[in-house]
Image (cartoon, rainbow, N blue to C red; front, side, top):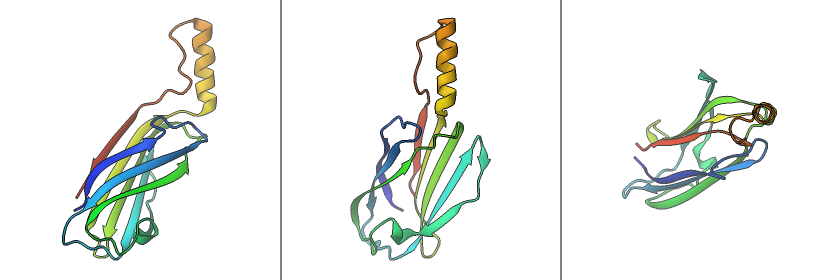
Length: 144
């Protein structure tokens, strides 16, 4: 139902143990007013799903939310003790459980310890230049 204009992370390449901010720009169409609902968070680690968590939608956005363009952002610490493939999905649902917006961010994360061991091994073998924190991020989104 909402149109996602842009979504991104700041910094674009998160550093373990430091803050990362999800920035979201979206548009609520004419004739739509949201007065409540819930936010659902789904996370997988190395393709293993965790139980979703929920919180009131109006805890994250100003309610009532009428037609127009909005920017939201949320900041959290990028995990420093988790390595592997991480997928995080956020869904906004209205009071009737209708999907308003869905955003997914996925990427490969490494712990600082693993990055240091890769660096040491790479330098000792003089293979390719060391990348302090190697990871790829694929941001995808779905707008209802």
